[in-house]
Amino acid sequence: MSDSKVTDEQAASVAADAKLKAAMAYRNARRYESALKSIDEALSIQPNSQLAWLTKGVVLAELGQCNESLSCYDKLIALDAGSAVAYRLKGATFEMQGSFGKAAECFLKAIELEPSNMGLRLNLANSYKKQKKYDDALKCYQQMLEWEPKNPIINYLIGIALGDIGKYEEALTFFDDALRLKPDYNDAALAKGFVLTKLGRKDKAKACTEKLLDTKKEVASPKDANAASLNDSCRQDYEASMRRFKDAFSPPK
Image 1: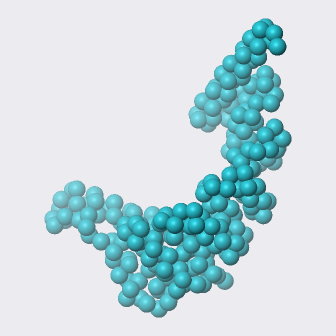
Image 2 (image 1 turned 135 degrees about the horizontal axis):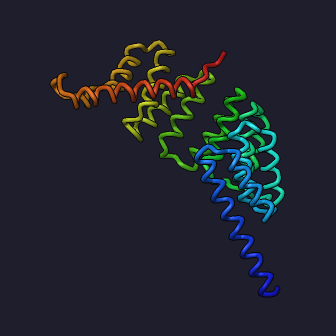
Image 3 (image 1 turned 135 degrees about the vertical axis):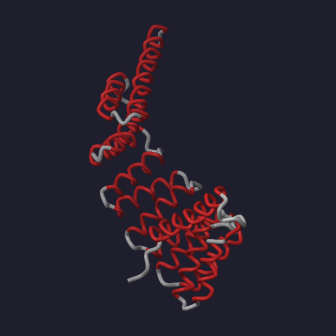
């Protein structure tokens, strides 16, 4: 390869990179039309730029142009069949369309490429939950626990999945494990209280709620501005946990 050809390729790479940097700045500023224009200019210089196709797919998805976004990820996969990122993004875009079965297929392919990626397994489990395939979601979480047995979040998620299918007694053991690993895990305490209520153990459920609203953050004088602020923070944490729990938990019908 001649020196002049190398120089031309280097110049093209620099020019394309500059266009992509501009596109990302436009995207961050929510100037999507300008971002797409810069991306297309980068692609006119380097038609096989994987970063350009990925960025274009993301921008189009943010604009709600899901079919166009999927085409970009397909182009990226054609350029690099081993791109777990492309399959993950493609799966996320299918979810935006409500095509959860197709999303799961993409996440499964991404996991084949990166088996130790817990985020991909979580994507797959969530996709199964949206299809009400709770047993499949539970298997995903259990596989994650084999990789990270001391992760309180995974224990919590397994508890939620067991609750989804009405296995409340089993769910309790995982919420307890989550709280043992992370005693201040509000979401797990809230979920435990909910399951105890389902089992008719209202006194124990009440104790869970009281622990969530524990006054450890409170100071003796209610007039103290800092105490009031901390109390508000404690209650806000509780309310946020409640919202997350409602989003995560889907009782059987």
